[in-house]
Amino acid sequence: MEILTFDQLPKAVSELLEKVSKIENILSQENNIEQDIESPISIQQASAFLNLSISTLYGKVCRREIPVSKQGKRLYFSRSELIEWIKAGRKRTTAEVRSELALVSGRHK
Image (cartoon, rainbow, N blue to C red; front, side, top):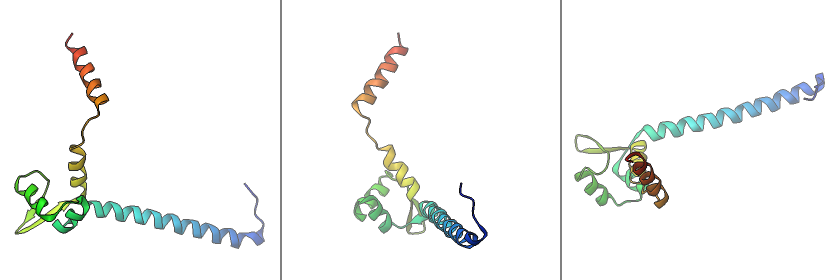
């Protein structure tokens, strides 16, 4: 670490303040993203988020295939619940299936 002289202090403090400001901005953006994930979204926003038509979403809601909240006549979706719903539909790879079969067959011997 470099030793600063008295004349270099103003510049060093200025650089530190700039870096702290950048860190604050990054943390603020991350906090906003977390809040956005938890805030309810409309069917139009869910349609755009999932890249599905609104009529397809209504069908999935009617068949209770997708997580949704209803207040009065309005439907609300949670991004985090939609992300979990997408993850739940993940297909396992052949290697994962074989690995699970090997574990199960090893237990039954």
